[in-house]
Image (tube, rainbow, N blue to C red):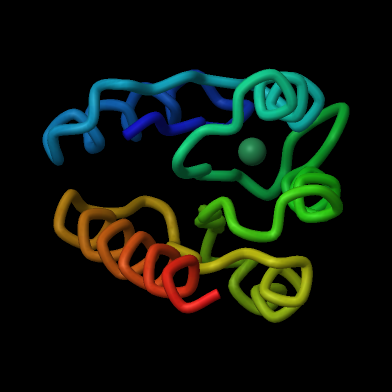
Length: 127
Ligand SMILES: [Mg+2]
């Protein structure tokens, strides 16, 4: 499974990559803002996107709205801080499938990914 990991903090990306690795995911492409992520998505849509909220150039919510203009099915998990949790409804309206509060554990991310992928493949099969 190819995962597009979007976060402006290299430290956070490294932590997340490590968590993903522990879950057995090694096919990961990184982007440091929404502009780069959108360019990667346009070239080759990944199987799953993990998206940070606050980033320079293009933030996570704008990225998600842009992706959803052309792709309604790609699973997207928003990675929020505790402070952004109250804005999660906005993210859901923009089309995220799930969200997780940073910092997250291997178990919690693993659970979110399985939930999200199960729902996404279920929805694809039903449509
Ligand atoms: Mg950020």
